Length: 302
Image (tube, rainbow, N blue to C red):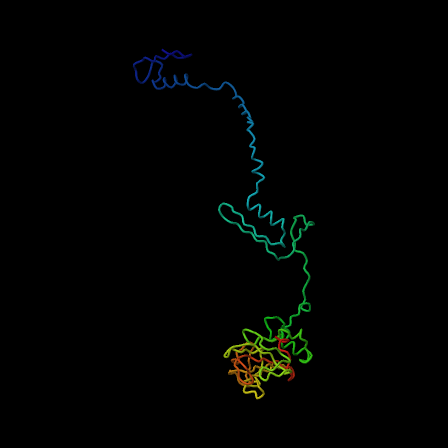
């Protein structure tokens, strides 16, 4: 039996659908479960307790500051480039994760300056002076070229700048090329004892260079062939080249020649083969330099 304030229930009633109070067994069971279940709150819920902040004093890492102070390879490169300046050149090879990082700062470039007056700290290029056409004149005239890369240009400038007869030895030195690949003096220019007669006081008009017969003979400079053939005064087979402005070179005692009169030749061209024709005691090359028809010492031009 279950007694309430206003009803009495018989839970042992064999009637499966209703008890003596008029309720079914299911209704009686739910009422019992409600009475035995959760209770309603008698008041407002209490404030949730705040979680206590726990500050664990972890042990300090002795190497933390060292790791923070260590710079990465990229940071080292950028710091070095900033410290060395744009105008310098630096090559840095750093091994980082198995790779080699190479940084090159250009050696040339505009000078950069920090604009401190700008609030954003922008960088501007230094003012460069203007270059006008009047300040940069270039002479493309071939006769003005005096470098060793153009020896014929140097010779033409030398001959056109002044009379060939007034050119000094210092100015003419090196203006003519060697007529042989190997220059070995056999007899110098000037007075000597004649190798043929043995008499003293003979004037030697050129420079003799030792060369086996058949050795290639080269033009000392560009010019025009004015003579090729037999020289009746001891020169044997002879070639004469006119280089302009009164300057000529001659090649004597040749075994043969490969040029003809009127032919234009360039410096270094093979014009003949050495020999021992004419007044000669053996294979060699007799080389002459003539200025306005007069012989001069060839060593002053070679």
